[in-house]
Image 1 (tube, helix red, strand yellow):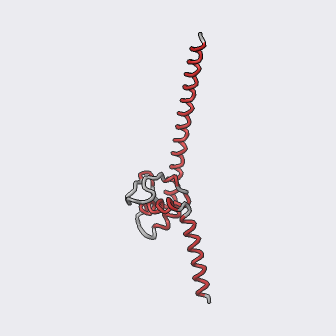
Image 2: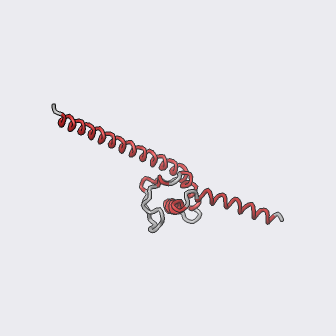
Image 3: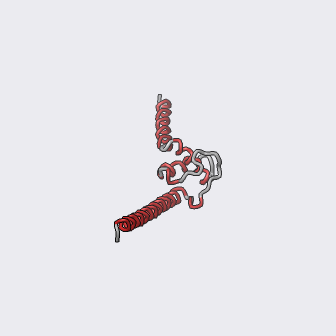
Length: 129
């Protein structure tokens, strides 16, 4: 076998191994994404009583339109759904509003909770004067 053929065979083997590695990497990435979505789905179903499996946006024009729900912090999502139910009885709309808020500020609901506690303390202090 001449040097040119050995080089071609080596190149083909390299390409074959590279393609296999890329395919395994993509498959592994997809399974991690599915696991993450399932974790979100189970937690939101348990905490808020909704199944996000067939979630689709109904409010158009929000900042989170077409964004993946797993992009957002799960704790913030659960907090947000509960908070937004003050404004709507539709849990899916509450989820959609939550995602819009989190798109702007990733820890929106933690900050909101902190602000509300501070305001409550201020109001109590005024009342006690």
